[in-house]
Length: 391
Image (tube, rainbow, N blue to C red; front, side):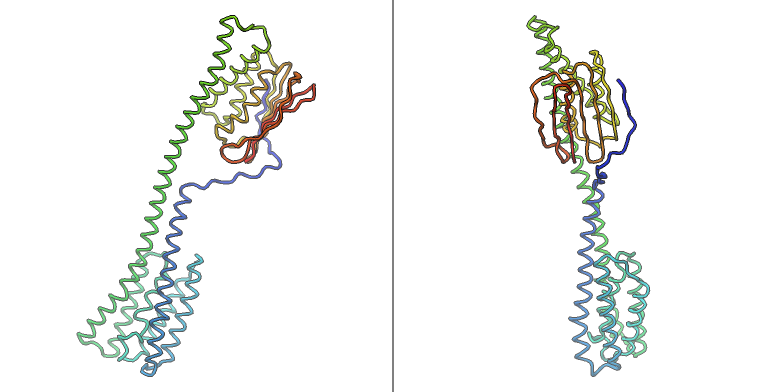
């Protein structure tokens, strides 16, 4: 038996697609969780800025020291928030340093141009709003960055208090309450979103791993049952032939009896070869059948082109069984050809025609996607048997 194991490219076969593993599913879950948190942060910042800050500024415009600066700072912050929010929701990278520099500049300008009588009111909109814009600008960065910016924001406010002379115990107590109230919630959302995304990824990974183990266990159990049933079927066929020979009901010289014996032995040998741990299980099973046919005196060539992709056992059976069955009844000579590619495998057998009734081609569904098509053609001189799988 001659065997060509050199792989050659197969024209017309598409490239194999990489499967998506549990890690990809966990990343998708974490990305979805993070996307929801991004949306929440952007909505809170913009809604607070528009629904709380703007009405207060417009209502107290006459009392502001320099209303143009306060209102201009509001407009600049709104524009920066919209631009940063859009990029954040699109997962485009944000330039944090320029964005934070502009926000800090607005912070200083508004505190400096607001009236001392409006220092602890909503008209001084940077108190309650700017922390949320820090959250948007620093998303997915270490939490200490946010703490530094909130600390700078608090120092700017403290400097404004000193500049306005609001240093009484009551003013300092109100200042402490404002710092706590305007810093704690943004920090909680910022850190909580990161923790939730991390926990979501961990739980998704654990769930995907557990599901994969369950699927592997169920597949192994199903494979064991199918193999046991198939072994019983093949064993009964071989036992029937042996029983007939032992009882004298079958003639060992009868070609039909010989063909039944060779077919039963080939199927039994291929079933045993299924469980062997080899790089190319399909070629290994076909070689086992070819070796058995060669021992009966049949000259046989086995030619391989390309490398078969990983195939489920059921697909390999549907590819090998028609060829093995035809090989059991072959006389004269035989040639087995295996053409493989990432998305298709063809197994064909050419032998002299024995003028038996012609069987039509058929297609059957296969595990792993695609179909296995069977074709059996003959012209009185040559018989051509083919099994073809497409993804």
